[in-house]
Image (cartoon, rainbow, N blue to C red):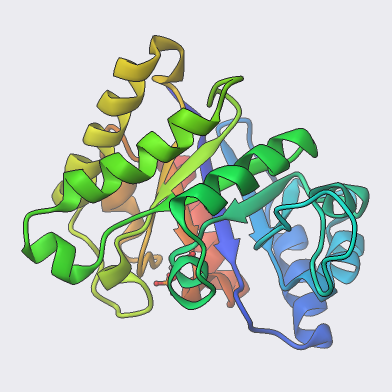
Length: 250
Ligand code: 13P
């Protein structure tokens, strides 16, 4: 069985004290397991505070974004190596908010994925369709194109990445994809990756979009759902820990 990953994306939330308290509560409340990894991705500026709060715990640290470049004249950017220096092991790449609001194309996302790998970080690469695309019957075409861009860029392969399927219509809306809807897309993703290279059959595929403590178990019960990328419910320690517990019991 593939181990599960439960990742909290704090987005643009938490002031310094809140970030510290949330990380301390997670560190105290999670005893860890080989079967489930818990990861938090705070705003970049809080990474040192959160890293200190998580020290010695079984909760891992990630970032929400990284620069496409390793260094140089790129004002305001943060390189993968810098994130690694501060204790990050993961980085979210190509979240739909970055694609829609900050112009990240499939090509930019693929290039950031490679930068993450080069920096020693595990990229959590997000893919997903809009409601209009779903209603037009284009889910597989959209997801397929997003995957193809990753496959084309990854000359050294995709074995070290994590994927997150986040249907855009389910993000922050309370409208979770049903377990069957999510499973259908996850199976499509796994099939497409295994067809490209059998060694990629075990790339973890997380589900994201209104995951809560009360719907996580039914999602985790699906064969091809390897965990969750959690937004809103990752901002309350009890809720996020409860999702972690659901993954342990899956
Ligand atoms: P919500 O869990 O708030 O819907 O956010 C999902 C998400 O975008 C995680 O990256």
